[in-house]
Image 1: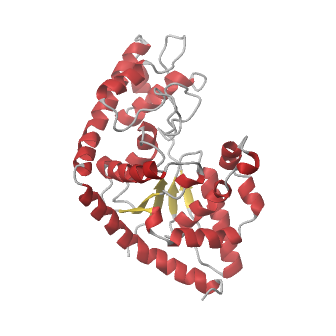
Image 2 (image 1 turned 90 degrees about the horizontal axis):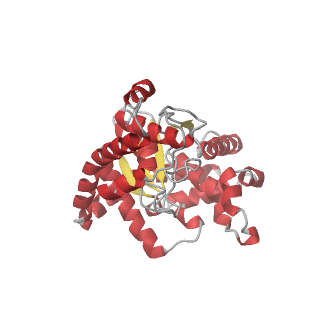
Length: 329
């Protein structure tokens, strides 16, 4: 048992991982592997709360796992596994759902956004999505959950669910803390800098995939939306140029002052060209490692199976306690 704080991080296999995932989450996970007892979960059961293709999901799960390892997640230092391979996730989700007030779920912003226009045809899984997310976290007694600011509400709900359960049945769960990093925590779409970069957006030039070819990366940045002004500075009133500068800052590690000085007197073309080159340089070793992993599927299978073997005993221990205090054993 590690004495390090335990961290749970989940990512959906709903499309090719993109630069926003890398800057906002994956890179931080890699950097923190020595500091924390990390559990990295490919949350495939969250991906089925909306219409999906089973074959595509199966492929996306493997792609995402390979990308995470290619980015630097070390299966020997961290626990990397697929959510559906540990059945305790869904069992705990149901038990938590039974004690979670309906109003808590209906207030979730994501449910309101994704259910708009669907009426009574909306799947109930979309409503109960937050209790599954809470189960993911609480199952491993995670103390810390790194999230983007758009997911903070879900972690706060997980805290409420844990607190309610502890009050009803006695101390059973660690109440997790959300951690949000400011720099690069929210990368916006290149074609619409008012919307978060997302795997679910259809626009060809919206997101930079971690597996994109260099020429495609250059093309996407060359078409990135900016504005009609000429100076290159961080300004929340100018989301296009600020988004590009935020990406540059996150990948270069330079301060905003240094970056603004670097591009003083230069045009957007210079910024886009330099940023594309920086992104290509950053992603090159990731693409190479990914190709090595996918060339030998059995290696990936073995790594994921080993992750389940490490995650399962902890999940089983939590569930043994939960069943006991709830009168189910």
